[in-house]
Amino acid sequence: MTLSVRQRIADLARGEPDRTALVGFDARLAEEALSWREFGGRVADTASELRAAAGQGARCCAVVPADNTLPAAIGIVAALAAQVPVFAMNPAAAPAEQDALLRQLGRRFARACLMDARLRPQRLDLPAGPEPPAGADADAVAYLLATGASTGIPKISARPGPLRYDPARTPSLVIRQTGWRTGQRTLIVGPLYHAAPFTAFVDALLDHGTVVLQPFFAPQWTVELVRRHAIEWLQLTPTHMREIAALPDLDPASFASLRAVLHTAARCDAATKRDWIALLGPDRVYELYGATEGIGVTLVRGDEWLARPGTVGRGFITQVRILDDAGHPVAPGVTGTVFMRTPQRAVRSDYVGEQAIRTTRDGFATVGDHGRLDSGGYLYLEPRDHDIINVGGEKVDPDEVEAALREHPAVVDAAVVAVPHQVLGSVVGAQVVLRPGASVRKAELAAHCGRRLARYKIPKQFTFVDQVPRSGAGKVQRWRLAPQHENGTTAP
Image (cartoon, rainbow, N blue to C red; front, side, top):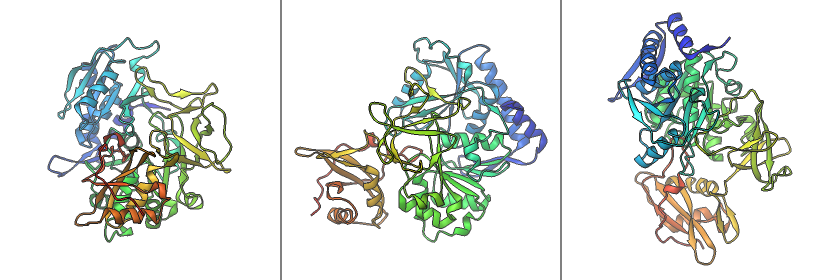
C-alpha cells in the first residue's frame, strides 16, 4: 500500500515522536536536532500555508532556496506533502542563471511561491512563457531539479508526481543494493539542489531514518560527523572523496559505523577509487552512474571495479546499448553514445520547456554521454564531444590529464582546457591549484606529466589559480575556466 508524503510523515511523527528525525546547524554552526514530533508538526503547518498560498487548481510551484539547512529541508518536505511541485534552487547561483531557470519555470507554471527562511510562502511572479504543451499538467509534477552543470546551459528536469511513499520502492531497488537499511542514519554532504543528495534526503526520511545535514563540505568535518553520529550510509562525489582521502592521519576507525559509501556525479579517477577501497574494503564502496532525467542506471561494487578498473558497472534493471552517429549498435569495445532503457513502470523525468530527451523508436534514451561496453556488459564512460581536446587530430580526455596532475605532491586540484594553437588547432592548457605553502615550476609539472602521458597529452601551458570552478556535484565547470593562460613551458 502506498501513502502520500503528508500521511507518511504524520504516521512517523505519531509512531516514534521522540526519535530524532533531522539534525542540522544554524548560522553560527551550532547543532540543532528535531524530533519526529517537531519535524512532523512543522511540515504539517508549512504544508497548510503553502497549499493555501498556491490556491486550488492554480499552476503554481514552490521555489525553495535549497541550502543544507533545517528551513530548506522542512520547506522541501512540506511542498511534497502539500503536493505543490517544488523546485530546489541553488541560492548561490548567479542572478543571470537564476533568471534563466525562472524563465524555464514560467513555461510550465503561472506563478510560484518562494519559501523564505521563516517558511513563509511569498508570491513570486514568473516570467511569462508560452502556453504549456498539451498534457503538461503542473500538478503532475512532484519536484524539479536543475541539471546541465558541466556545460553551463541550465535546464530543469521535472519528476512526475505526486510523490508517494511505497515501502517496496522507497528508496529504489538499486539504492537498496548499496547497503541501505530502513531506519538508518544518513549524512547529506552534497547540496540539496542536486539530484543525488535531494533524493537520498527524501528517501531517508520517508524510510524512517535520521538525517544529518552538513551545511557545507569540509573534509575533516565530514569525517567527524560520520564518527559522532555513527553514520551508516553516505553519498559522496569523487571531489569529496579526494579531499577526504588526502587528510593526514586518516583513521579507518572513524568509518566503522558505515555500511556503505555510494559515489555519483562526476567520473572518479582510479587513484581515488583505490584509496577508498583500501580505506573501507571493496564490499562497502559502490558507484552509480545515472542521470537526473531518470533514464536508467548502472551499478558497480568495489570488488567488481578491481576486476575491471574504470568501469561504472552493468545496467541495473536497465538495458544499455551503445549506438553510433547513425543510430546503429556498435561492437563491444567500440565507443559510441550511451542509450539506456528501463521497464515501462519506471518513473522518468523530462525537461521543462521545449527541450527533450533523445530517444529511439524502441524506447532507449540518452543524455548524450559517450562510452563503450566490454564483452561482459560492463560500461566504461568516455568524455563527451564538447569535453574532448583535439590536438592535431589526436583526442585528449581531460579527466586523464587532470588525474595525472593531481598525482604530483604539490597539486591539490587541476582542470584542463583546450588552448588555441596556430598549427595544431588546440593544445592542452592546465589550471592548477597548489597545496598551501607548496611551490613548483611549470617545467617540473610538464616533466611529471611526461612520465605518465603520451606527448600530445602533456599540457603546454600552465596557470596557477586559487580554485577550480566546480558544481555542487563536483563536476568541473569548464565554461568558467579563464580563456587566457599564462605562457607555459613546453615539455621536452
